[in-house]
Amino acid sequence: MKAGLIQLNSSDDPAANLPVTCAMVQQAAGEGATFVLTPEVTNCVSASRTRQKDVLQHQDDDITLAALRDEAKALGIWLLIGSLALKTDDPDGRFANRSFLIGPDGKIHAWYDKIHMFDVTVSETESYRESAGYRPGTRAVLCPTPFAQIGLTVCYDLRFPALYRTLASAGAEILTVPSAFSPVTGAAHWETLLRARAIETGAYVLAPAQTGTHATSRGKARQTYGHSLAVGPWGDVLADAETDPGVIVVDVDADQVTQARARIPSLKARRPYKDPS
Image (cartoon, rainbow, N blue to C red; front, side, top):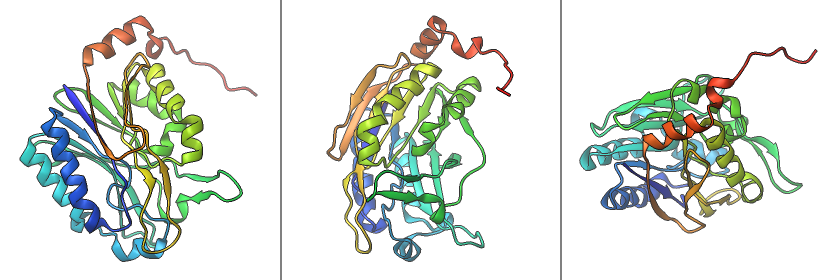
């Protein structure tokens, strides 16, 4: 099976981003990918809460979700919409950062709200408070498909290895990590963390990413690291998209997961222990 990872440079205009995303999904399918993945916040990259309130939509009305469901059905592919920024009915007005797994029937087979919010101060000039605009999810999500069991995560989740062990112990053979990683933390940690999650679980880790400086009509322009990565279950980097928008296609074989886990059976070897007092 071939997987296609899409690297985007999304702006803060969902309507303008959509045809670019659809074209790349079609390109990946044309190159043989039957599982295609887009990055975090595929529909809109923005640091402005007021801009988000103006252009984001509820799930049932979201133009990106509707169009990509149609693309998956037309192309006969499985499609991970890495995440969409969506309005909710929460009283505090916070959005959802929601990942969707779409089947070749065009239906939503699974959805996952990002659990871990990116509330960090990277430097004196770069800080993020994702929880101010987005409400965190509360459940881990695993979805069976004809080619593999898929565990869904998003971006900052990557720094919480227990989530990946939980998914792998439940049967995940592919772990998805759609992201919009900071350039500073990306250069320092991105590849290392992705390879570690693959090695620890003996699973494929597929991480499509946003890249570059993102066009904005309001507020400060965001920058993201790029380097969409596909990592094999032995921890080897299968492909790196570098920093330009585009598509990378890799082979994925569930037998490689079985072999890696047989060689290092760490999922089965874990023992209970007492916490330090």
